Image (cartoon, rainbow, N blue to C red; front, top):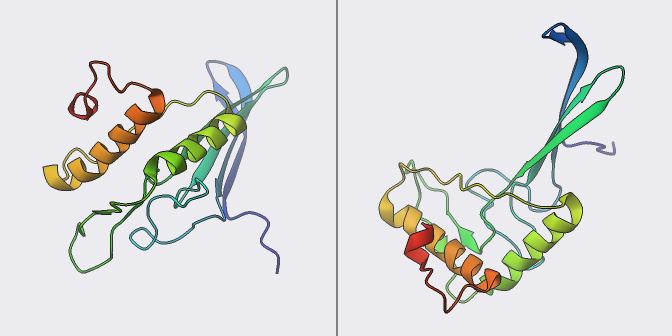
Length: 161
């Protein structure tokens, strides 16, 4: 058997809102690159592919127009891992010698080429302990500062966290 789509499709024809008829479609596609279970696959690889990357497209079709909104999500694009164990929140391990900036840049360059302008949202839980959250967010913020060319200006990593 050849897998055609690793994801989810929902079709809701004949919907109405405010007296207007439309068809609603939801398509989620999971990337074949670096797929895995939650704690067994994290971070990014040297090609800029993040773990557990999913693209979700919402499509609304009327008689006269079709609109679409695409959202993507994936693991934080730095080299990190979280070995599975019996604890609720296993320790976060950030690779100290990895080239975070190159992989981060590859990831966002590919995303921008494929989707256009990107808006990134931090989905790291605010309730995580400060040191777990801090280790990963600080590295991501530092890489962002390097790539954005902000070094030497008045920004600091702590300002971005």
